[in-house]
Length: 155
Image (cartoon, rainbow, N blue to C red; front, side):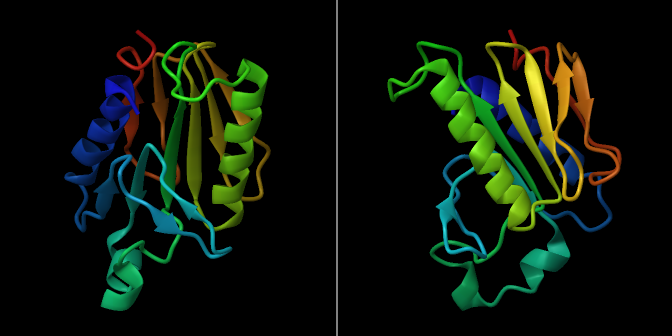
């Protein structure tokens, strides 16, 4: 994740601090063991306090045994990726990962395609929403009151 992806994690944490019972915000270095056994590390994520508190010490380390409530993956612009892949391969792989998060319990997932200034929003039992050229994006209703400023992300 580059600094532009960090901006989204920062926005999540600012929102998190406004909650009566703040959850836990994670950056790109945090990995999770999903219910299907896969270990994934989204660019930014958030877990509700109730779900985090339900984990035992053994299921919190080395990778928390849960899928975050909210996950963000940032598809970097060409030239910033560390692995050489075609744009269609990168977006296809990223979309498959977002479906995996959704299928493993994420209530909301955003795939941020910086190259095309597009957000793909993933929610359970709902078709993927495509949001083109947004200035901001709302996490409602899953994350009440959360709005991310995308001007820095797409800059």
